[in-house]
Length: 103
Image 1 (cartoon, helix red, strand yellow):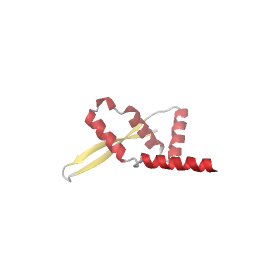
Image 2: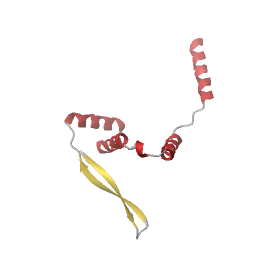
Image 3: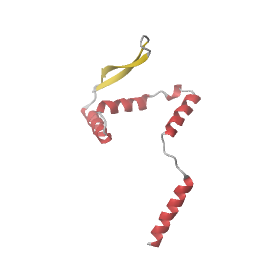
Image 4: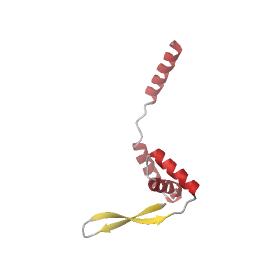
C-alpha cells in the first residue's frame, strides 16, 4: 500500500502555495488490506484515500488544540449539517403515529 504525504511549499516568486506529495509505503497483512479495500469499495474511495482518512482521524492530536480551535472546528462541522426544526419533527412524528392508528 502506498500512502501519499502532502508537503506545502510556498512559491514566493509567484505568490502561490503549492501542495507537493511525498510517497510512503505501509506494509499490511493481507487480511487488513482486504478489509481496507472492501471498505474503500463500499464508500466508493480509493484504498489509499481511505487509509489516509483513517490514519488522520485516528492519530489526530486533539489534546494539543486549545478550546478556541476546538470550538471553531465544531462550528465548521455544525455548518455542514442540515437545519433541524424540533417542532416540525414532533408534528411529523405525531401525524405518522395518527396515520398508523387510523389504519
